[in-house]
Image (cartoon, rainbow over all chains, first blue to last red; front, top):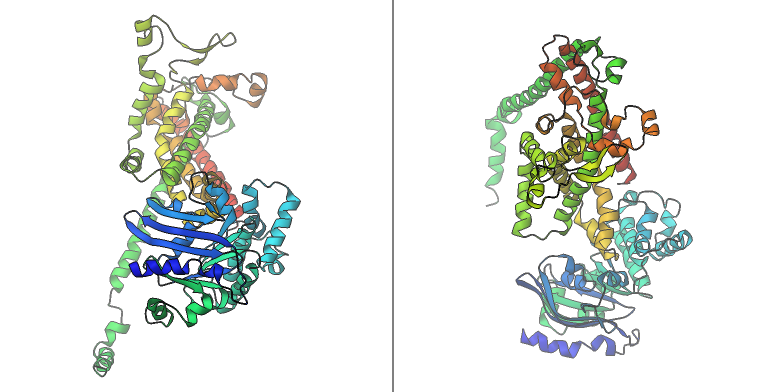
Length: 276
Length: 355
């Protein structure tokens, strides 16, 4: 699609350069340069170039199978564990290409945390769940561990609900609590970026609202990239929105602009519900 | 279009009320199937009960403390005891577990977590189930060649001596035992039996462990990896603990099979009437006084419980029939005890998991 390719170049720098009143100029946290991604012989991503600014929420929207989750998982190299995948292009995390041979993927994943669609607490206590990341990183000090667990749970807005039962099984929590536990667990490794793959799609409206509030608070400290099917959610929580279609990023821009005044017709069609 | 279906719906209850509420439709097959299943379980339980009752009846009067604490006797059935068999089985099974569990679980982890999906690994996976079906006597022949005789390589008549002139009979000459600590070839000893049984139960352990590992949801792996865990940490802290109950089940099955195995050990040449324990350790005080016996025992000749029973049944003296019955009761009791213990440990562990 030559059309869209040319429109990228104009849009790539847009979020960083835009001087809107509420969004002061931000440093780029992640930059994708001509990223292509393949599962075996089928290409899933076509020449994705975009900038994700720091301390903001960037939403990736698009119909199922459009490559938005694949793109999200290239950002912490979770796709590496699938056999027969390959890529071309670069992803820069603060000017370091994360696919460079000298990059330690384990260290990368500590910096770029991830929360999955289905909450996946480990079959252990709440405390051990949150402490897992720091412990495998070599933390032995009990007081420090307890401190990290408490602050992580507080940041994930779960502390008040679980502070008296830290040693109960995490499996006993409700769905929404489990998802916030997974967020706390990701925060415990002290990441800079948080990737969220439809974090609220399996939750009821009340729990969804809590997660959205949480995302809004977390962007003060973290750079958040969220994949969502729910367009209202993208509009509510994100500062920037990227629209994906069939492995191509059609458009990226301020969330407000994407939802009120999209440049591309395909974006408009999707947002107004004409397909997808 | 819209008014066609409703009459059809109204019609069916009017025309065939019996079919909707009566007993005909599929009811007979349903009941037949239920009773067939029920009969199947009754028949197996009944056979087991008859066996147990007849064996126990024969064992009464012969099964006493003396039977458990005496060595065997070829002359007098009344003095015949099972101690050498119990201790022999103990040694063989402990060594079998030590060999087979690490190798089996390791192989399963490799096949499930590391191995690429290529033709070689598919071939290996396919043949594991074939190996589990190989008759045990075949493993006996294998054990005889590989462990007992070691392809006839060692000793004064071995081909190493004939080709090179060096006679090689073992490792570590021991003044205390007046022989080699590790003789080569092993000969008809405990460790040959244990290694042979290890080969026999390895496929069972590998397949059960593979299934236990496959049952762990991949979301658990991804969650751990996404937190910056290495593959080893993910396996060590998430996957293995979650798979332990399933792996334990496989080990229980394997050990139960190994305890009851007779044919391969007969093939290896485990002895029949044995008047000593491996390493001459037949009580706790023996172990305290001669701890070196613990090193000696794996290279000592031995017998096991099923071989003793097999041997007693073959004897011409009528009374040995009752000795054999007593032996069967002891063997079954020990099997049940070990299985119960293993299940207890397994359940403890799954509770600890906080699912």
